[in-house]
Image (cartoon, rainbow, N blue to C red):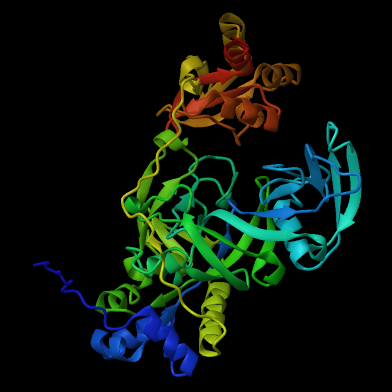
Length: 505
């Protein structure tokens, strides 16, 4: 006799039953913020009985975004090899006239000001854009170049395709260096003078269903002001460390520029801000508990972006309630915290999605396959050795501020160096002087070193890639970097000659 095993964990309701309630106009929908308040005031059992759907939302910079378009065949036809739209180069991933607009690809005419994200927004707004394309020419595709103007209505397909979106959470980024850093986490001021974070915290879709019980392949979502779908786990999906991501698609022709916006990060590049929301069907008690998660329960790491990724230290943990308060503490010091994403917009997404469901404009789907929960992000396998500052740094010639100019001049001559590092009694960096500075001081008959010391010194750490050190020297037009540790003790020096010698090999 066949034995049928029935799971002891029975759902309180099903997605089909919820969709029937939407159709009948008696569905009960709360935003994630409203759900948390209900659970706190009335408990899990009441929330389970009263609520059918919880809506979530997020609105932040999604660099791993883009749009797949088909521009149609020209007459005579062209098999596009390279193409530009508004001077943004777009890739050619497939057949003759399929193109992909990458959000972070920058304009050749206006780099750092206009890029693929802005181009996608312009098309969604209905603006006309210029297409230029070149090709090598074939018998069936004889054309070798074309130039025309297009709007979204001229495109056969215009689909947003974000291969990594909706991070569960982000690290909190800070900077220990003496100089400002410009990163995908925004502008990081020197010596821990600010902290940047992103993400909607307790409103984030993936934080409200941590085990992806209702989220997976085929889940219908709010995407850019229209309906879209989850098509896979996102790239770099790392659920073991609660850095889950999703891959999504949607029809850009139906989207709103209110929820799709191009943006530029100073001295970093361009990106695309995306509004995304997922409805969480309340099928059982566990989902009530998941959607009751609060900001104070969501922790992330404080990470020093002034240190290379391979040895980047975690300075502590902080929760989203603290981050959203506007300040955090690092080693006892109060530091201003700023969000790169918009909680106001995320809240708006959740409220609009709630309205769609209540107005019978949006129905829920059951995923045909849930997101994986056991994967972990792996770094790139590298088969070539990377050179670091520690490979070329050498002992620095130093002095203290109370030494005479003549003494330092003699040291420059006997040591055959162009840079002298100024230190204190603890060997901590106080500044730098060059042979030119000393020559000038002697020519003017001065003997006080302090008037010739450069105080704002660009430095390096031994674990930095040599390419980073080289880029710093080029950016600031200098020829040497003192190498220091986290306590600012001088460990050595690296010069332009050192870099050229090794990279030249």
